[in-house]
Each structure stands twice: as structure tokens, then as C-alpha cells.
Length: 104
Image (cartoon, rainbow, N blue to C red; front, side):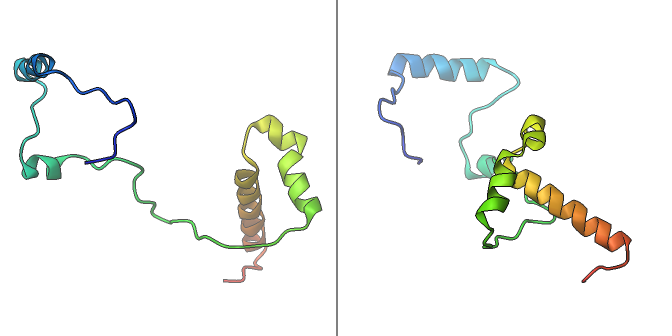
């Protein structure tokens, strides 16, 4: 069972009975009671990426970081700095591949 937040209030027995009666009365839902019911549920969260990103560590000069963080034209576009950096690197990679200078 997940950790509950401080101040979590559980329903009283009368409220719980009303909830269960509502579940039984609703034709579009049912109470999950078995392990089989839980295994049929859709998983929560983001789906697995077909091409996951790779974590790297890289060192940039202060000037480069300042430019990526505060470039007005990109801030106006509303994109986070590292998203803009990734998009720029992807474009550059594609341009080099078009020119026939791919390193892969």
C-alpha cells in the first residue's frame, strides 16, 4: 500500500457502504477484488520510449550556458533551455548527415 499523506481521512463505515452501493449500481464500473482484475488494469505513467534518451555528463563554458539559458528568441518560444539545446544539436546532426558528413 502506498504511503499516505499526513491528514488523510478514511471514510466512515456508513460512507464506505454508500460508496460500495454506488459502485454496484453503476453499470460502467466494478469493484476490483482479485489479483486478476489488477493485472488487467492499464499501467500508470508514461509509455516506454521507442528510442530512449541516454544520460551523459558534459561540461560547457559559462558563456555557452548563459546563452542557452537567456537567449531572448528561444525564451519567447517558451521552451526550456535543455530542450532548446537538444533541438539545436539534432538539427545540426541532420544538417551534417545531409551534407554526407555523418560520423556513424
